[in-house]
Image (cartoon, rainbow, N blue to C red):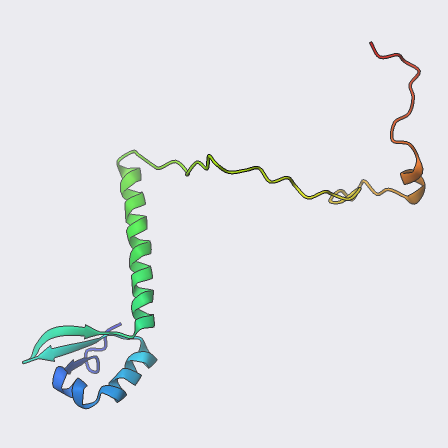
Length: 121
């Protein structure tokens, strides 16, 4: 990620060539180390590349927390949603999702129950 030949510059050089170096930061996404008196003092990075770095760090930290929980014998249960309301399923048309349940127009006009001649108890 860091190109030692091109991504380490003096602060003075950065000040003299700011526009050029900012363009390079945007194009490469690589951070640039700025030195003062030959010592690394600052790191400059494009905002989009920095956000991507933060996202990766956050994901890694989450994985590490999960692994530590498993190692300690305390895996977390999934969250319980207590105040959720049940949402009814949308109405289905006759035979929807069941290829063996095709209904012809003649069948749809027939009553759905047939008398059996028995009296319910």
